[in-house]
Length: 175
Image 1 (spheres, rainbow, N blue to C red):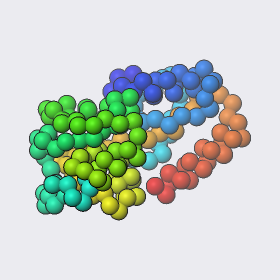
Image 2: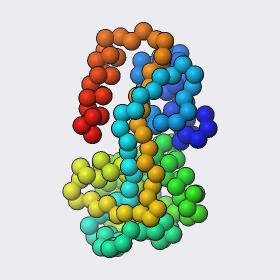
Image 3: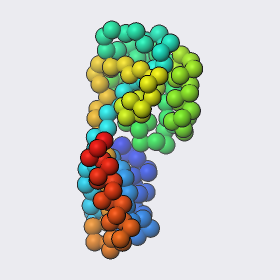
């Protein structure tokens, strides 16, 4: 599946949908396997996030990708689609990031950022939910991506799956 997050998770979700092991899945937009129906839920913007005591917290201008190379980062581990998206950004900018910590927990990353000199890259919705975190604009910004609901096109859709689909679309409209 070219031009995606090259995400093993997305491939596994689609395989499970097609094998009737899952009723629904959530993944990022891109090419999907034949027989997988997808509908957009919302767009997600990633951004650099720091604590209030971080050295770049007072930056008046957007931070260039080149300047970001010198900022110690705490990032999600490589098994997250978000990390693959971030790695692609650095590759496209020709930047070798200074990755000080990898974690498989957003909560852990938030604590590292709050308590230390690390920065991280997270969805803006998480940053907005934590008043003690500061978003730092990047130049160029990280690409926006679309989150989609996946389901098998020809499968029977249970009442629970239909109810969940309705609820997630209603929630996504408010996002």
